[in-house]
Length: 510
Figure 1: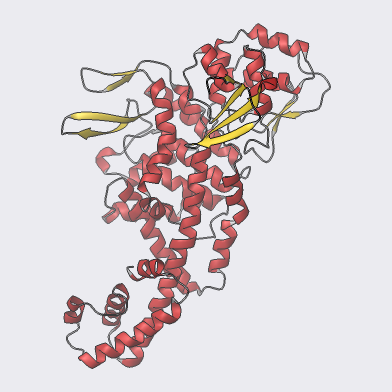
Figure 2: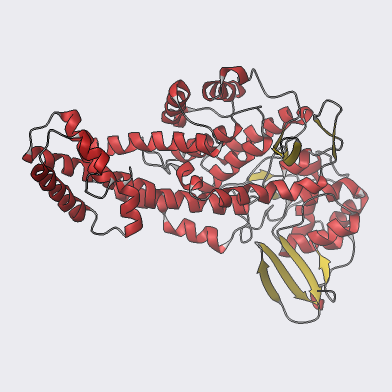
């Protein structure tokens, strides 16, 4: 490694001392052949010495535009310290050059400043982002000044990027939405409605559980009601977000608007020592950032893969943390909002993504930490005498521009899991329950409530009544219980013959 030198975006960080997270893809030049290595989700691209650019702002930007997936936060930081005359000289020297025009476009797009250059002449349009390296919008916005097609996922106020990776492309090829539709096709409407009803309850309980809370009473009912109306929710309206937050938190912590104080995510260790895991944007930045976030929710509608869109909208929201309480639940609510609005989820169905998250809490934490740990070293903060956090430097761009690739991959994995596990198991459970209930009624004419309790007790214990449950049905003889157990076990074997042991156990514990 010592024989290799950083180039491109990594070189810009080192050369100009930029306080930004490192690029997800680090480029190096040195002896040897072209080689790619991946370690801890970070990619290192090694190039022969012949690829080495001029060791200057322009040289490394040109290399990045040509070979690297871009992280806009790095470009934004570089442009803040750049002499605009260098960029102007480059564009004048190469007025038709695609790389020069893209750099010119990004400079004005990211800084809001205009270079002393005339509009580009007659030349073929070029994409802002290389579609072979990035997930981009389906239709770009033409910038006539630069002759560049703006295919960036966001807007200048909020623009995460997503790299085009083999894992994301594999998920997209699986057509998980079509798989879900096939799963429910021909399903009895009553069975589907009851299964979906439980999925809403399961999502609510799981989403609260992630926050170490219990979904009970009216809060749970309000959250279920919100989930059922998610398709019609309007996230770009601050009043709608505030109303949702008010509906799902304790009334004492209901917000009247976006926060006007500094917040953070942490824990108290030893009863007195506060450990900070994530520092949220400064209160003076939150309105501008949320405005940019609202723009991206509009920009992405119908313009990108729905799961990628859901990842950008939902994780983007939780990183901004605009409220004191309820941010995590709104974050997961937004996943469902996007998937439903884009038609990825079948009508009136819900994929309980939070249930998949609960089964892999560490994976969820790791996904969140890909952002929080990356920006933490670049935030200057202190404890005030009132034991509150005060951020001392400008951090807005850290939350505005980030690589969201691993977040998109994580969400895709959880959506696939919840379709193939939770949706399938609930449909199977309802079918088994109905068949078992019918088998019980054929043998003994029990009241509906008693028959239902009996069947649930049998399904929860693999077709056998536990001693405790047996005592609750003292009106049944031992022979009757044995006959009912045999009948329900026969149903379970017929209905779950294709399931493995783990799946069968999960279904029967419903």
